[in-house]
Amino acid sequence: MIDYISGKLATLTPTMAVIDNQGIGYAVEISLQTYDALNGKGSATVYVQRQLNPRDGTEVDYGFATQDERELFRQITSVSGMGAASARMVLSSLTAEEFRSAILSEDITRLKGVKGIGLKTAQRMVLELKDKIVKGDGAGAGILFKADTSAAADEASTALQMLGFSKPNINKAVQAILKENPSASVEAIIKAALQRL
Image (cartoon, rainbow, N blue to C red; front, side, top):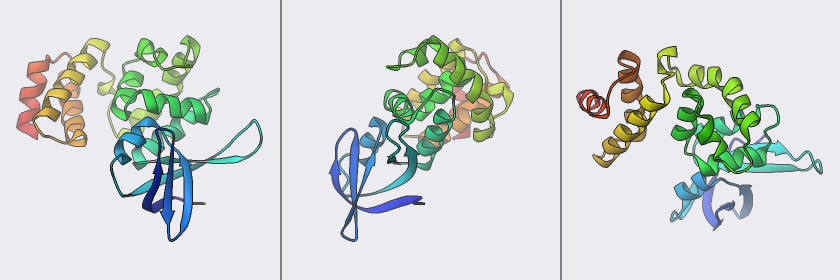
């Protein structure tokens, strides 16, 4: 089983990457999220997940720019009725943060905005993934904020990114702030985050 491949980026399209490793070209299917991360780079490391294609029994390799995105892919494909193509569509439409936020805040409308995801599938994703995401992130139950708080958190996170802070550090700080004060305003989140970052 291949965990990751490092090498020269021989081909890159919005749906596929070919990594040249010592003269062997490894083709992997990718999401738009991974395409954006790899675009403009001469070499790359992609984390691989092999999935069985139920239609014809062949195996397809999916590549991800980060282990985090691969883990989300695995979680999404664990939902009943969600195949690899649907998981890739989700990861092409939403960033990892946006997806987690939609699941934790039970934002069915945002999930339904992904092509091919209907009401029942969106509800099933929330039901089956909410606990996994909370446990996987090491977040407490206090992170399960309401949609309006989620909007404030998103706006504050965007502002902090524009100030030059990294996404992982911002996410940790914002989650901790919302755990202490779930109804914090955008300004309050930014002020508290600046003290932590």
